Every structure is written in C-alpha cells, then in structure tokens.
Length: 40
Image 1 (tube, rainbow, N blue to C red):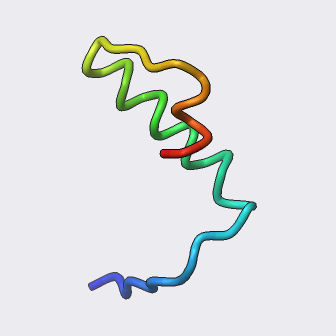
Image 2: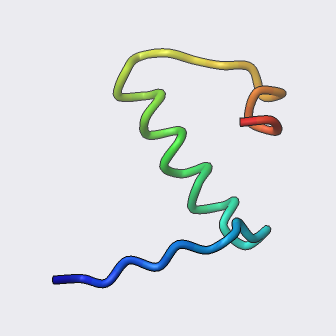
C-alpha cells in the first residue's frame, strides 16, 4: 500500500493545485472568478 504523507501547504504546491482545481471546474461545467483562486 502507498504511504500517505500529510504536510503543510507550500508555495510550490500552487501550480499542481491550480491544474487539479481547473480540471474539477471543467468536469462540473462551472466557472469561478479569478479572485476565488486566491482564497480557495
């Protein structure tokens, strides 16, 4: 089984998170304003 590591967020995580978040929004056929990205 794969070991899971939980750690605090880092600035370097943002690009991957934004890619996943954009795919999530696309899947659910929705859009959110850019300023929501900054606080989500």
